Length: 180
Image: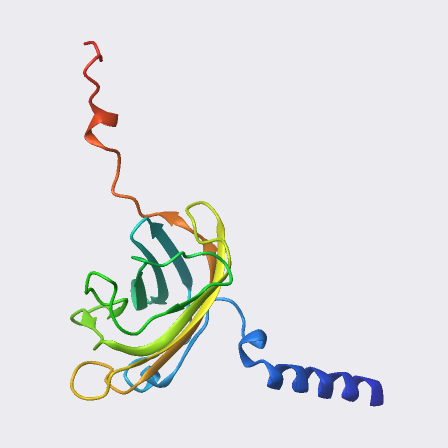
C-alpha cells in the first residue's frame, strides 16, 4: 500500500511539472468553456495544404455533430515542422490573420471568434498529408468586443493529417493529348 501511494504521489509531481505532458490527446480546455461546452470531443480532424494547417474538434450531439472549435493557422512565412513554435497572434507577411477560430453548433449560427491576441502551436510529429500528426496549442483572444473576447483556448490533437489541397490542376484532368 505504501509503495502504491508513493508511486501515485510521484505521478502527481510529474504531472504538476508539465501540465501539457499529462493531458491526453484530442482535448480542449480554457475559458471559452463559459460560452459553450468544450469537453466530450468525439473526433479530431487535421487538414493540411501548402497555405494552412487546420485542426477541427467535433462532438456528437444527439443526431447532430457540433464543430466545437476549428483552429486555422495560415502558414505563410512559417516552416511548419515538428518542434517549431508557431506564434498564433498577429498577421502573416501579407497582412492576413495568422490564426482564426470558429465554432458551429447545431441549430445555432456559425460564430467566428475575435482576433487571436497571442499564443502558439507546436507539432510533436507529422504535419503533412497522410502523416500521423500530433501537437498542442494555447491562445488567448483580444479583449474588447467580439465573440470570445478576452477568453482563452488550449488544445491537444492527434490524427492522421488529411490533404486539404485544392484538387488537381486543369492540366491534370484534361490533357491535350488525350484521345476520345
